[in-house]
Every structure is written in structure tokens, then in C-alpha cells.
Image (cartoon, rainbow, N blue to C red; front, side):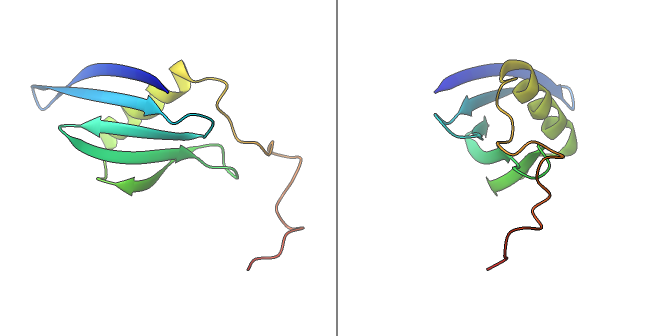
Length: 92
């Protein structure tokens, strides 16, 4: 597991953000003020998406996304866009 910490000014108050990557997964734990949120990288869109926990405000969400893409550049979706459009699979 890899840990990243950063401090951002949110409404004039310093807010510490801790980002942890789960091993062998494309999931991340975001810890802000002892509240844990879980975000992951979508297989279809290759974007960071909310999974569970406390929802971040848009400013912190943008900063967390930038931290993920900066420090974990090889953590991408397994299916490459353009190679598979998910129409071959049945929805159950």
C-alpha cells in the first residue's frame, strides 16, 4: 500500500488529505478529518469515481483526482477504450 499526504486550504483552513492505494486494486482510500471515503478507477470510462463513505466537495474531489493521476500514472482501466464497447456482454 502506498500513502500520499497533502494539505489544502479549504475556506482559509488547512485541511490534511491522506490518500492510500489498496494493493493490487484500482481503489483508493481518502482520509479527511478522520472520515474515510473510497474512490476507484472505472473500467469503462477510466475516470475516478465515488464508491463509498463520505462524499467530498467538488474542490477536494478535483484535488484528489489530480493526486491520483500524478502519483499513480500506471493505474488505469484494464479494458482499453476503443478495443471493447461492452456490447458483447449480457447484463445480469
